[in-house]
Length: 320
Image (cartoon, rainbow, N blue to C red; front, side):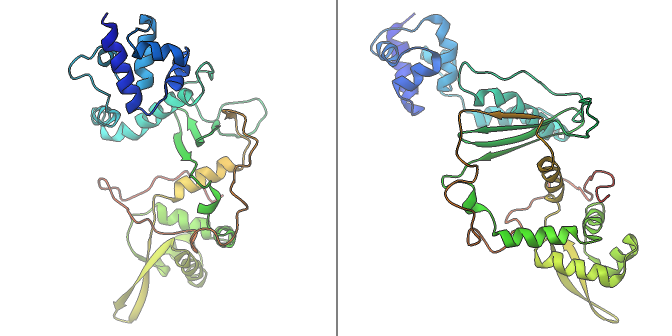
């Protein structure tokens, strides 16, 4: 093989990746001095080429300087892969891909069991408890929370901001307002009803009839939900005067909220801490009420519908 070309290519791609010789060497299990020798005209052992290419984000062909073998554009590769999958299956396949990549969050030489996708998210653990098979991973870069099973799967990634998580939380009193509202009789039932119907404006009387609640009680809940920006309203002019009509502001946020709340209320089935992190999860000082915006619940700045989806799918009997 042409030792000089390989050394030159390694040097080029290493610098493009922002890695030092020591970092590349450590990543593939050799010394920084060995990397230096490669770049000065030596050559790595042929068995190291796949690992070197992977760490530099290029193909093995690129290490030989072959035309058209520059760094892999992973965004284009991922985009092409997703476009090859039927639209209805894309989110599920992407979720599976993320889970299969979790092992690469760990340091080289460490590993986690290859759990794959489970048959069910509610396996029988022999203790009679109805617990989701939840996986939690904490690394130096943030948090991953996920369920990976054939009957239920989701994955959430929470990279830690530069100043920690705490500055981006809403004031505690805003959370208390939200939780007090959700605990009021009829509130979860009302939200369930709204997420199980076609997304459109409605009046209090219509919701009251469906929920078998008094119109006054529903109006109080609607007003409180609007104050927290969970609903928005318009004034309709009818023959008998003006009537207030409501619509959900963020129809896609309710289901994740319920799932995350359930995860929070149970013992994690799989918890992996990558590294020795003794620091608190909420760093950079205490969580103070002056952090963040005055509203914990807000409408998104970008909301896009893909396709004609009139109804959201909710679990049965969420309000019981």
